[in-house]
Length: 288
Image (tube, rainbow, N blue to C red; front, side):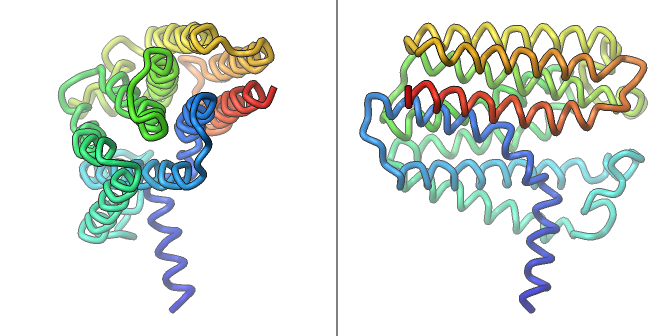
């Protein structure tokens, strides 16, 4: 019984790519560290923020897998995903999405009335992403925007309000997510064009799409530097920012319009390192 439950948990974890939580979570934790500079650290708040992040992302990814299942079945790259492959049913995935949504709302409620009421529009924004590829090539930008609410939400949870400097971290996450999502979408350029789905690579071609991705990641560096200035951070953070810039350069060198062989290395490994490096930089700067 225990092994069966463990196997089911692992299956749901694979469906939502739980390991990808590392892309956005360090940005949210960075917002917490920045907020704690002027507010007394509260580890219980940190715990609820992490739980809210996991719940929101699990709900959004699970919902996306349900909505995309018919298309995933037709795409050779995604046909082995849990729902189209018959490993999970839509009903079980729907129950998972419902449970994850409740976890998110409950965790938000534990962070205060404002976070509780904001959790509902945020959840709607996250779930709505699954439909954007049906009508706009800017779905990557929308995805970045939806995920970029994470550090803003973490900041509000700690401080109880909004502050302009945190907006630079939020926008940095938006451009960062949108940039690498465009790269990842290059794998489905032909499929999207044939099935009427929208994406920047299918609209302007992989080469131009990669140029857009580079531009967005350039904005990421500029926005992180602006965050450094706005928060009057110690210069040690610039060392980490330099490493982030180098990692993004390597990511774009790994992926070519006519050669996507290293896309998984660029997407999974380089992006994980970027997020972790950012958090390490913010934490080191705070300790300094």
